[in-house]
Length: 262
Image 1 (tube, one colour):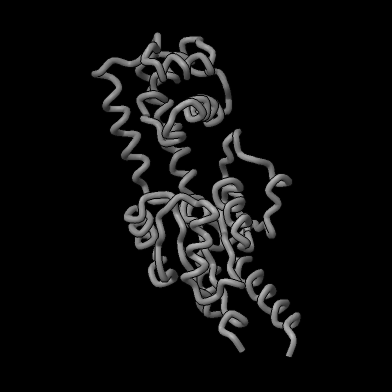
Image 2 (image 1 turned 180 degrees about the horizontal axis):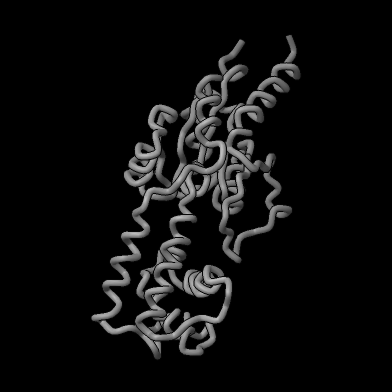
């Protein structure tokens, strides 16, 4: 029997799939809003404070070349303008052109930015079922690799802090395009039994499907407004806990073995 018949390769996204990076960002954004309110003396009336921040956050990301990785000073200026009564879309445009009306001074903004980055440095918690799922994948002999668009060094450090060392054979940093998945498949022991687990339909699931990889969608807490809907991407599986992954892999292998001629 070929090795491909009995083993599997599982590619896993890191942020918001293995650990809850979004929860860290949410806490940092809420702290930033509170600091801006204190400096400006203005308070929001919206009861959903996180949604208030993220409307401005996404308006900036849609217009900035770095997407959601835009400089935090832009968010500070945009939120300050919105707190002073500016429309959020216009506030985003003003921030991006350096024309914000209520922008904080060069003395006020740096401490807020420093505190924001300190908050982003907090260790994220594991997502549901991650440890149990990884233990089971190791027990059944899967080859497990992290595929990330984040910095490899940061992902490795977070994995070490969360006690996940030993569950992965490799951490690969790169843009998740179909050609990356095809290249990785050529390097694995089980290209026919390959899976991708991720929280983003457009960045994780769609390119993996295009490369012929079985897809497992593990929705995270934050979906940007430009993300595609579930029906347009159609992942092979949708899970609520990472602990579901090993059974999906085992069932797939079992079905494949039964369909092969003796």
